Length: 82
Image (tube, rainbow, N blue to C red):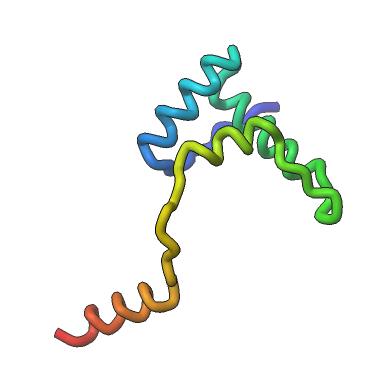
């Protein structure tokens, strides 16, 4: 039985993922389903990244390392000191 799922994903990523799915002759829904299936079928000790996931992970590259702790701290300071 299929169930509808709503996701919030960056527009550029969706566009590139749709192109990838189209090139693979599958729907984006099927692509996501297969990815989630691969996650749930692998044990933690035998985690294997699906080839599709490896390819999609190259869509977005973060060239800068973000220190999330400092970013959050800076935000909170600026929010409360006005």
